[in-house]
Image (cartoon, rainbow, N blue to C red; front, side):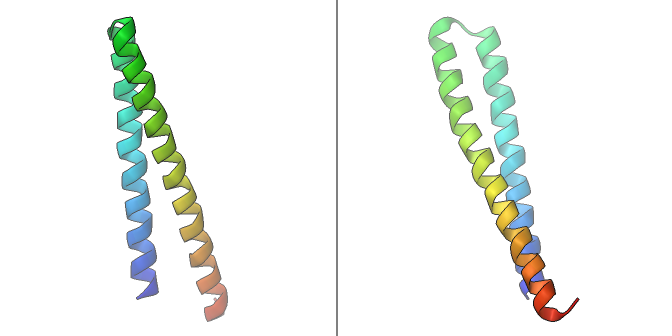
Length: 76
């Protein structure tokens, strides 16, 4: 059961990273194409997406640590 939870957590973390990466790319593209006023919105969106990516990375690291701890507890 723990392995299913870990796999689900990793899948969620990876999905969050991919979504955030798409948002960052869209913000960069929008910033390149847009006028200066819209550039501010692109920067704001990019900042929010960066925070989401950092949270996803921290989540992934914690899940990996939990998997390692579970393996050590099982004696693998």
